[in-house]
Length: 187
Image (cartoon, rainbow, N blue to C red; front, side):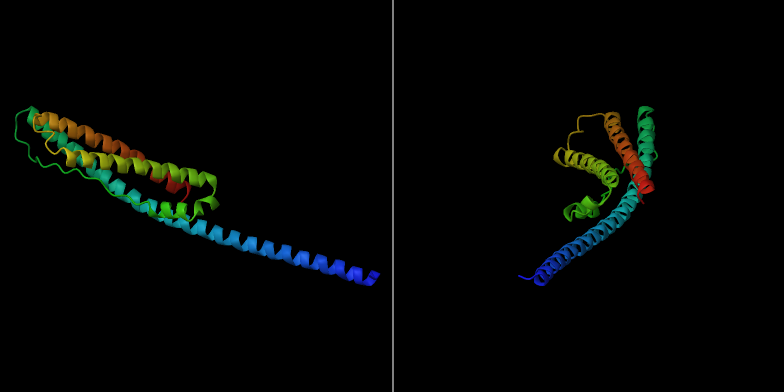
């Protein structure tokens, strides 16, 4: 091999190596861009979802505070042997959504989000899950044992309902505050 042809071979080797490395870098840059876009889109959807959930829980919190006041008024009437003005108590929960969060986990978009944001989101959705379990447990308890209050006095039934509503209010206050803090920090 002549000196000229060996220079040519070395030049071609480095040219091909450079082209391959450049191709890998461009491909990696493109993948990072796609993943960053996916993370940003997921975060936008999560923020919308959290805002909607916060509005639902804030309304339910207001409703439950009114329900608690009504229960206490009825209880006072029963204790004073007077007829309550309204003895109809409605107690319900609100369904919250977690589809944006679940989608972000399934598409692995959260692995491209800052760790602090993922940690905060996880905490809020864990609290939301606790609220849903409380709702589920209460509903199942009512459905599986509809006659559990038959032998109780009216004031005892009201005491139990008051305690349940107070517990729901506590969870809803914590959840609502967590939503608001998250929206302040991320949204």
